[in-house]
Length: 242
Image (cartoon, rainbow, N blue to C red; front, side, top):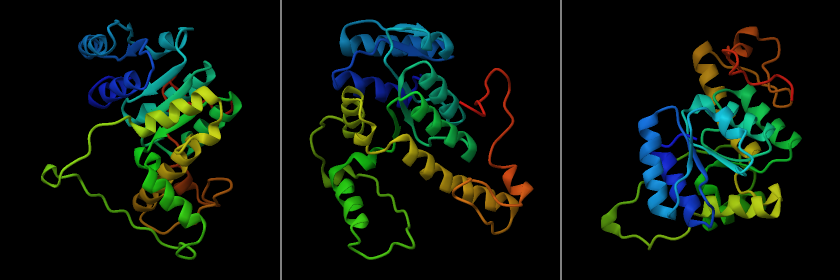
């Protein structure tokens, strides 16, 4: 679902990992046609086409939905897919706000779906090892973390292309039906996105805030709590209860 640049990347990665891309879905018919041609070249078979995700989710031949839409669609598409009995690979950020991120987690748990968020670095071997060491306390208690991003420069060289580890990890969990195998499950995706949402809420309110991580609300702070969700337009509404 969503077949522009990142969507086409996912088509290629799933096709190369032993999956059949059975359908493509996008509101833009021009993008659908390009994705059909691209998919057919990869696997020698045309996929079905859909403009409406609701019709896609009715298709009993679909086992997994990969979501590469605009960010504000990530949560609702994930929830609907889980309700339809599909496993989900959704691109980052997991959610558009804190409230709907938690609904994603609840949906995956209730309907027993394998749900992975595309935080690809978490599937790399050296990153997994670093996470393991941090949990073991190799540098003591972690009280501050800073992010730094470097982009590859071709002049330094590169390794040959290989299987995409984040898609490989997801498909392993799908086949085993064991969500514990996921290196970037929906809960980790929700919590990672929530940190950014909380920072944005603090910026928008112009002040420091007190957040309760259990209830995922700001106690006695109606203004801050108003930013935890958004107004939805029926029928495109993330359900309050699942």
